Amino acid sequence: MFMTTGGLNRSHQIQGILTATAHTMLRSEKPDQFELFDGLFDEAKQELMKKAQEMGADGLIEVRFNTEIAQMNVAPKFLVVHGYGTAVKFPK
Image (tube, rainbow, N blue to C red):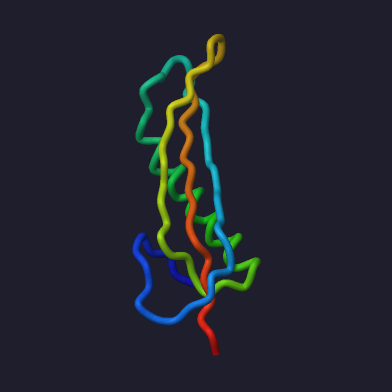
């Protein structure tokens, strides 16, 4: 199983587009803990890989990540990482 942010220069079949989202709430006493994004990236990557394996894909290409800081009116901030990519399988 592999994951790449680029494409492939070999024949492959597209299995589908996969998405994963990881999030955490920032505690009010430490509202600027942006280093927590590192763990969220890992969590999103693992979820993408798990979904790809479940569908029988050989890997993921064109993987991208978006980050977001969600601020609610009365609630604390949330750090959010959205990951997406294309699952592919190599023909036998």
